[in-house]
Length: 236
Image (cartoon, rainbow, N blue to C red; front, side):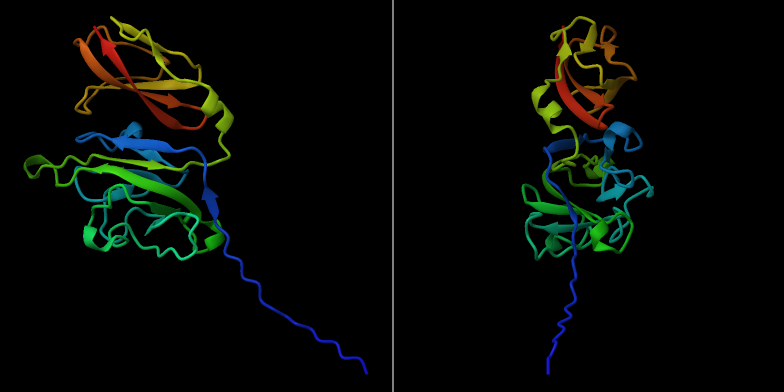
């Protein structure tokens, strides 16, 4: 008699997408308008992170303000790195217990984009570190909603192009017009050193002739990967 043993084992595979592309640093200056595109980190089609003059982050793509224990929508957060298998995810307010609405600074964090579904296979995991966070509610309470973090990006972006091409504005110093050296720059924003926006244009050049002499922050928008680059220029 032949005995045939059939072993049936359930195979459960929870596979997420890990973004391990080049690092990107995003900053929102104190007092800046969260309704403006350059003050939103548009990570994906569904997640655009920003912050008001106080409180935590929210997803302005489908939220109008920060909601304790809920915002940012379509995201979960954990202390650790994407290579770990035992990450414990929670909402933005609660993932770092003692913080309240303030995330830990200079600490390795994993941001999970849930893609609006309950399927783990739909998730995107991103390594992230907060560089700065302005506490307070704005106005007489201090604050102003400023924050900065560095995060990993989608590796499917053209990494070779990003690494080999330098983006700059010229002439620098300048007495008037400033130009970019790459045609893929489609928008420019000009800020003073306090983060106040002074000028904006949907072109690859801008005329600084009407503003005072001094140092300014220039943000350049790449239409190929929808990222903002930050440069400094001296007007004299």
